[in-house]
Length: 105
Figure 1 (cartoon, one colour):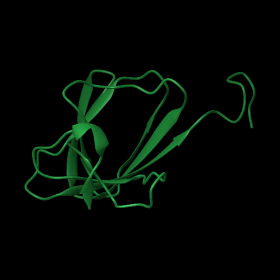
Figure 2 (spheres, rainbow, N blue to C red; figure 1 turned 120 degrees about the vertical axis):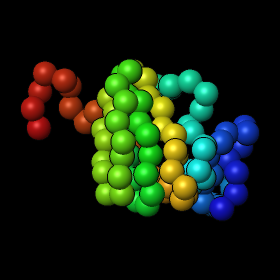
Figure 3 (cartoon, rainbow, N blue to C red; figure 1 turned 180 degrees about the vertical axis):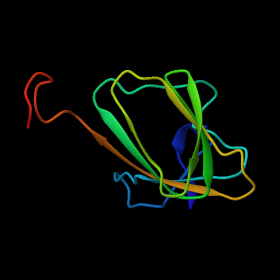
Figure 4 (tube, rainbow, N blue to C red; figure 1 turned 90 degrees about the vertical axis):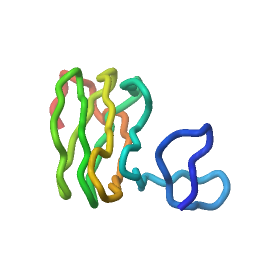
């Protein structure tokens, strides 16, 4: 694994140039950033593959365990921190809505 660009505290699996990897490694003590972030364009679906994470989503805090999945809608502030003793591995998918909010699929 190598560090992602921009000095972020998370790690991404090494990929060919120009490609992005949705799998990330967070070592004990690492978080997604100093402050919660949001994504304007679409939802984030995060699966915790290994380890434990502390989640702060829309100001609420919870503990995520291996196998947990969270869906974060656009515009919702969130931050994940590895407060455990072992590395945590996440897999995220980012998506824009397929249908208008008032239309059911």
